[in-house]
Length: 315
Image 1 (cartoon, rainbow, N blue to C red):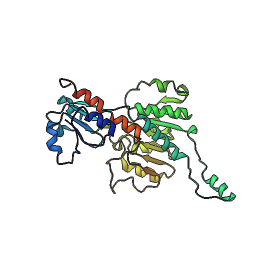
Image 2 (tube, rainbow, N blue to C red):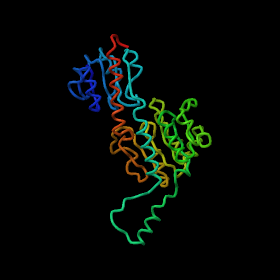
Image 3 (cartoon, rainbow, N blue to C red):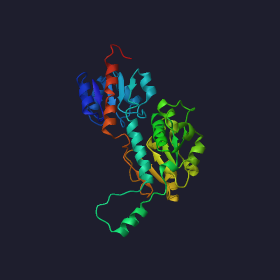
Image 4 (cartoon, rainbow, N blue to C red):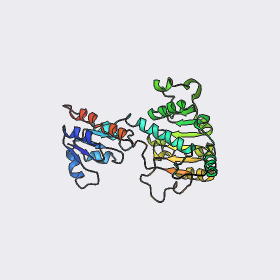
């Protein structure tokens, strides 16, 4: 039996249900504690916490499938200690997030509107002047903080838009995928730099770090103090990598800057969230990967889950 605790697209759900008993049951459903001891598989997304306490109540569990990329909500060490295999879909939403980040950059830099009525010549001319963008991407430096799958692909798009790209990764300089190394402009306009250089030189900063615990508060008062007063700051990685209060203080003090944040700590946030009601801070509800294609790709983690469960002996 497999317990599905969060949303799964219909087609992958039917595929798995033809092969295993699939029970939809959120963790706050009263049935969950009855089902968990007999479950062999657990199918989760973002908000189900798979920790040592849950695993202790699941003696027959053989596999946890995360329909998504990050494994922040899964205690990998605890799973390994109990011989529970963890599978996920690391490439499923890359294109969706890259598109979203590109859209955010354009939203921040290119004012626009949709006309709903005719205008006289004077108003037409004035509106064109009002909507003239002071900056364009090709004139700017993009700083990418974290060179994983998504960070590398954001860099590729930025190079195609004639941006200068500087990047910093938390680990040793990672190998560049061929899709980036062969991108036009890579040799001349892409450079890996120190954290300090990235923070101080980038006109646009896009964060793509992973969810390891030591990344909590990675972007702190020191980091924001190094940024340009007109920086465009984008975070689609994890909410907890940002220290919210110093970011709020920076944005209030620098009205020419802006922050576009798709991830938050906590989710959903409440009225105490320090980044609410700041004119140049724009919040979205964790939708960077919210395309139909990405959601379907993530749901097909059921194939890897079934591969584990169909083995004659646990992996």
